[in-house]
Image (tube, rainbow, N blue to C red):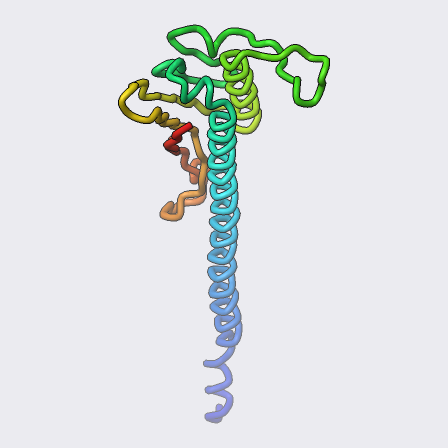
Length: 188
């Protein structure tokens, strides 16, 4: 056997090994790309839910500003809470079933008192929150002191799911859930 035939026999299959290594490298790259896509989608969903919480909290603050007679008049309860569409407070004013306060859009509708309007606004807000975030809860505390301006703190808590970026194995439990809170200070 001559030398060129010996070299040819030694190199047989070498190209196949090169192709297999190239396929392996491309596969690892595609898996990395897929994980980056999953993280990007998860981060987008998390940012969207956090933005919605902030917007919904701002809408409650706007309703409180719109009804200063009740919220800044010193008659608001010191604490209230919501869970789902249920509103609770120590005085029972905000948890009472309010009439539909539509005097602005329906001139023939009866006018609501400031307390009824506050109950209507808070219950409407709680129902809206429950439709967007079924597991949310909120708590509000208001300072009711004659010597200082009335201020309220509204804290919203919700459960958020996101894809964990440090999981070493691919499984259905790779997504993680955590409780998040958002606090808003309002001076009606």
